[in-house]
Image (tube, rainbow, N blue to C red; front, side, top):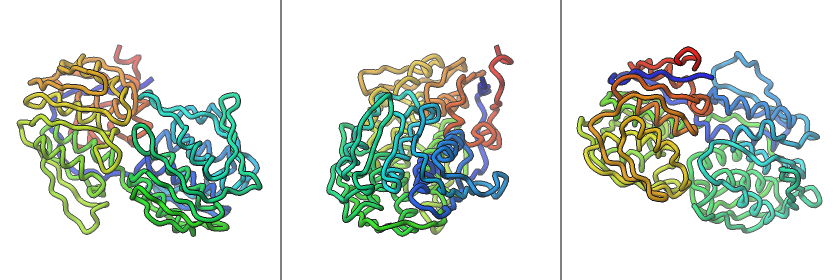
Length: 435
């Protein structure tokens, strides 16, 4: 198993390009199940989760038809075989986004069998909202032997008015599932309390290119007019706002000077607002605010802030750990409240091993800034916690060894290589070689 060995104390400087968004790419890829024509995706990140999604789609009869060594980030998917509709546990367990195949398969094939999904250990993430939405569209759904078994009576779903709000806000993957399913349903579907995330807007853009009729994507109400069939299309995946936010925090925690190309600044307004309050400075240029050039610098003295994670356009839960790492070095007491996944705090104990002063009370953590962090062996618990621990290691005195970096490989392409290109001292090693 690999680890990252990080020698802290290096100021980051240079320029990198933000890659396509994992959280957008995975639901986008499942949309290829909605048509019998090829769908071309560009700027798809090269990640373990993307590889696993391609394996899953291949099992469902949707194959990659372009050469694997073709243009970087280009994938062409073609769903030729409609007979295989069982998403098995051995692949689904590797990532939460596997549930995204449920809506497209049910809509086009009239049936689907999907194992309950896995993913990061960040707290309870039930799929009841997905199932409630599909039932509203007329699906007959049963649970058997760990699988979700869904059928559309008569082979086709029916449009409906449905509410997708949950205890911790709208469901992003649930919205993606229902949106895909509604494109081929009979009549009109109104999705109330839909997720407003940019990744949903990106999915709606692809579906529209395929011939779907969608209004309101990016707002809490999405209206879909069902069509008889969808065709092929070409689509460029939006830049990864979580990757961009992670590198913003990396610049700040090292007092660095980083230029982010292809930066989705317009999708990061809340993040940039909170970071500006900390003392981070941004210079955004370019004609497209979703693919901008953003220079990131910071003050030497970081200010404490209060942050609450919320659904978009609020502060994203996927940047909570990275911000927490930054705030361990702020001059005062900061407060982070997690409203999306209240148990997403396994990184707190690991940051404490590095000298951070943290106090958790339920869904809130109080961070009392310290003058320095000290390198230590730490254990990554999930994808974004892993990134937060790497950032802490970049600023710490001495050596930090981050274990279980396979989590990072699920969501950050060539993370250590790109950090090294900015001046970081970080290498990947087999854990046996650093014991």
